[in-house]
Length: 581
Image 1 (tube, helix red, strand yellow):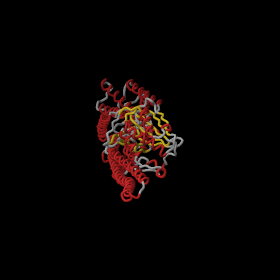
Image 2 (cartoon, one colour; image 1 turned 180 degrees about the horizontal axis):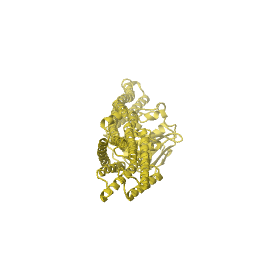
Image 3 (cartoon, rainbow, N blue to C red; image 1 turned 120 degrees about the vertical axis):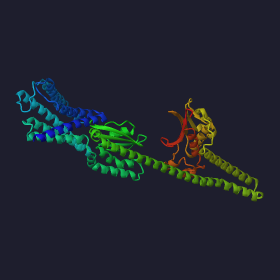
Image 4 (spheres, one colour; image 1 turned 30 degrees about the horizontal axis):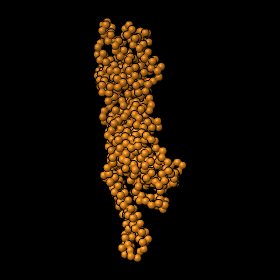
């Protein structure tokens, strides 16, 4: 029996010293408060085991001091372990203060002890009281730490839960071993051997809790590993949008680290998907605000990955007990980033293809429509020329004059159409030379209205005298004259032209009092050769004027947009720069 006790004693001493070294290396790698308290706690145990190699005789002052130091280390261990668990979930302030006071009292009492009985010697009443308080103190702290770890482990992924529960069990076993040591009377008894065996099991459990073997981690991680594999497989499948990628992997990714919320942001910082994120945090992320922890009991991990980032709201236990799982999540995040990039490339390719198809359709339609629009005046001209050629001797002067007037009208129409087509082609090819210069808008508008409208008094001009835009004068003429002419052609008077300054742009509005543009036609309003059914029946035109006007506005770095006037009518908004580009 004595030999077995001796073997277990030395094995336990070496094991606890090794445990202290392992936890110290954990702190050296992590450098956080939790690992610091753990290193302090298990470092005290390791130092205690080192001191146990030194004999303790009451007649030797140095050896007596060593014995006191060993007991002090035994006293502070459960308090340091409690502080380790308290880093994850703080207990009440009153309990924390009480435990600190009792620990300090025991340390002072230890130093003040007149002597420490050797094994087999009798114990004085004062020392018995000290032992009882010591055991109660140890038990309370151990129970608080073990219970906290055990309960918190329920909500953690498998690896973290098992590590936390091994740590809780090891704490309980160490407390049981201490109880047996306190009540043993013979160091070679079955009770002493049982205490040493329990101590061995305890140190093994501590080592598994802090550095579980790789095979054990793999075994524990099997449920999350399956979900991870399913998530990776889903990423390899084709997805048409970033939101679809997010919906496939968010919940499995959260399960890997036991996160209670997770969000994915793309490279632009836009949230493309979230799982279980509270509404207030979601709104902040959508606005581009930096992520914040949702509760005081959680940690925020912001993982940068290719093509974006993962914002993970984990428990406070995850970074310590789930460090490998966080690295797995980082790997999954990299795959998510690649999937987001792939979706982005697909979307760009899809959009480019649609644009090319649309451009091809526009070109085909443009050619067909241009040919159709040119054919009408050309057919008319051909008919009149043929008439003059074959029947001129049969026509009187009045009829000849009518034919000539018709020829001039159709020729002017075709010339105007050809000029508009040339303008569009030059604008598309950026071949029109735009010479912007500061222009006083009011005087220019007054001059444009006076030449474009038969009755300039029917146009209300409300442009500030100091309104200035940087624009080509000829272009401004083409845009405003087109809009004013259209206001009378398709709308009803009164027509109003007014302007206002907005940021770095001047907005010039041309508004009429007609019926406005039919809602279903607004999306096609600026398309080439497009006219609503009402305008086709009520007025002539080629359907190119608004397309040309918008192209001219955009050539200046501005724009031309349509708005419904209030209470009715059409309002065109010409946006012009006020600073040189």
